[in-house]
Length: 273
DNA sequence: AGTAAACTCCGGAAGC
DNA sequence: TGCTTCCGGAGTTTAC
Image (cartoon, rainbow, N blue to C red; front, side, top):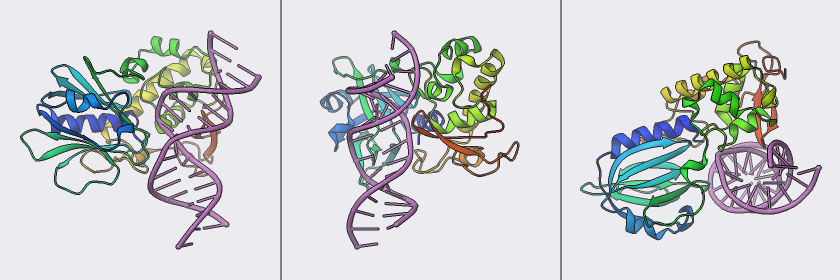
């Protein structure tokens, strides 16, 4: 499930594969994955050059020239790949964009269709959320800013998962960060003292950076653009480890529901203060 | 008003 | 073999 490290991996690989390329024909085979009006894609994208592919929150953004943005949210099962145009397509391929002067194309596949595409350009109407609707990047947060963000009465895990508050954390990296920082997921965020808050921010950054190095976590569907798996799942200490001994204290990992999600934690290392 | 929980989308996997 | 159930990112709706 693509969270920040997975989206970062995909963006970097797509950048290497596509920067400098010029987009060509657009084929949308499922209109409902396009947010807003799907027509601008075919009108706006062809002949624009890919200046850069980057990540914002959990999204992958193609920065185009002349100025436009093509934004992909991957949901749980979304995949972006660059393929030879004539090769067999996954049956859930919803969007294809040819790359001019090559026999390759960018493909967006998403079996469960929780993902989506936005085309942001002058004259291309779009409703729904913009990139600015998501909160700050966790890797850029200062301790003071983070303390301000968490000065609310919500449960800390719910808050970390809220994309309006902080961008890019999902179930895996929330649980892993909370465990690394020794914070119980149900702790009221505004009861964390300064020390715990700083510990938590450091844990978030450390784990995200390590996960990016490992090209993300492949738990079920996620694959990189080149079709390989990430390897950070080998370093998970709590996520989907119910009943297994905590790597720190050997207490069995427990599973509860928080923020409507399966939540894994060590009842000994992570206690509500 | 701020928070939490329930519901929605969907297909794959697991269980019976 | 064929049902039913579960799961989840994120938006929306409902309830406290």
